Length: 474
Ligand code: ADP
Ligand code: LRH
Image 1 (tube, protein in one colour):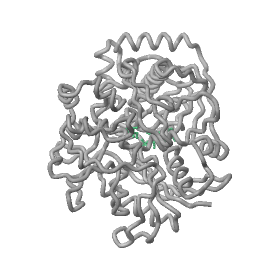
Image 2 (cartoon, protein in one colour):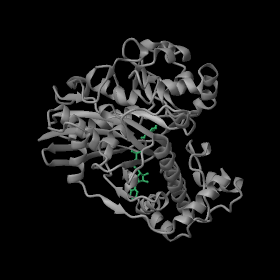
Image 3 (cartoon, protein in one colour):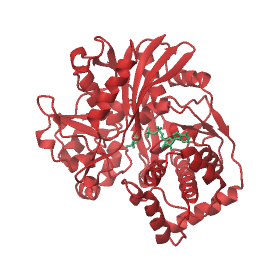
């Protein structure tokens, strides 16, 4: 049996989970959960990185003796270190407005076609490359560390760039599997700041006892440090042809492939080819996800999500629809008002109640999933038979049912803590547990976790009509 800690930092909460892994055992216990989110300071949105560090240490201290520690977090964001290893500035949140218009500027010096041919990455305005083009501290920087690598550095003193998260920067060559010095040069990023790549499963170092107050000697292991990479490891798929939605603050909707798809079709449909564990490719698109609902709840001051979802289940279907990926939904703010404005701008009567608003958000997300999955299957030429929904959003029964209905596919929901499980599994393998490949890891998740099945219901024609309406207003 191995006893490992998974530090899993999502955009809405961070957690330290204790994982116990053996031949037929895969158990997770929540040791510590803490708030995470944007902190506005002046005009800039930051992450509270020291709160995350402190909370991580608190959780690890409570976890007791550990065989190892692994860290994963959301992608694209970073901290910069100076030559003495000191943090330069506080890491900035990807929803900050400093990248407004930057992508367009960068595309004047590197074409979208070249960028895609090298990186295979979807265009998101906050990709690391665009953040760096807006960065004021780059000249003083010696090292760039993605968030999990930064926390790993503070735990061990060791510097490196874990590959799955590096692949989200848009500075990584997806075919050469290396940093793209050509791109770095063309956008003015000194190549020296990009550290040596490390693999999921590599030992980063051992915990520094004096600096951290933790037991000396515990190894810190690189996992799929991009949370989505870790969560896809824990998709409980067998040998069926599957798609997945990693459902949390974002909905990451797509397929697992062996090779990237870099066609013009994939680029035009804005699909990404992110690097997965064991060299797999996550061929997916970001859908705005439950962020819209989180922001509605914040504005309404309502943390009774189950109550809101019950009311939404009784609200009339297909009353109004939004394009959840519209840029106005990206930044924090008054989301209910933005939904109203979006409805008026698209000639629809805005929702009149919280229940109607939630229904609108969930149906619109289900339609976005349907469109994304259909495109993914066509572009990658990979038909699927089943859709796995994993992450916090897999607990949303209404959304799971709407997703099954909209996509015309059976949905298998769970596990909820997929990222933490993927994190734990990669550590356990590195420590010698017999988990030779993703198939073995997924079989262990399947045999130890209860999944909930949703069969498509209702009339497919209703969703066809809703989709035509949505395209009509886009
Ligand atoms: P992230 O890792 O991005 O922070 P999570 O995977 O933790 O996100 O998922 C958070 C989301 O899960 C919340 O925004 C919420 O919509 C959903 N969620 C959490 N608990 C429940 C629940 N009991 N029922 C339905 N949905 C839930
Ligand atoms: C999900 C996620 C996603 C990224 C986004 C920034 O937490 O890592 O895969 O696109 O955050």
